[in-house]
Length: 169
Image (cartoon, rainbow, N blue to C red; front, side, top):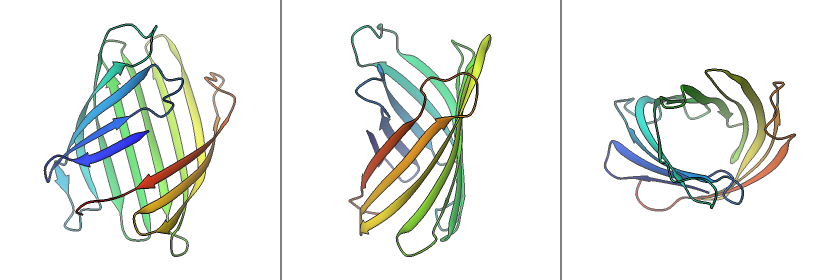
């Protein structure tokens, strides 16, 4: 689950839980578009994230993370990255993705994801997938994710991502 909305022209809110049946925390993240290209496709955005416990056994502590995201894009290809730092755990997590348009409404995706911290073994994974535009405002993503490092939080997983857009652009 990932809800993404603009609160103002430069402030966005993301509410996300990538595995809401098993992940015990849900994220609420605020991004500020500090630098943006004229076409709005590329830029730099500092962020603050709050991770709320949403399942029993997750404890009651709300984690606070800081970081930034960047995008460098044109109508045919996009490179996006995000980096989060959790000062309480002295841990970092991040990802970098490349998305290209190879045909009208067809977008292959490659993403490297990782996390690690003080005294912890790093976990690195790779996601490969395809997004397909069904019609204006409706996309479906299909992906396969697998670990690249010795630390394996899962063996592999297949994902389906329906994406719906509405409202003003």
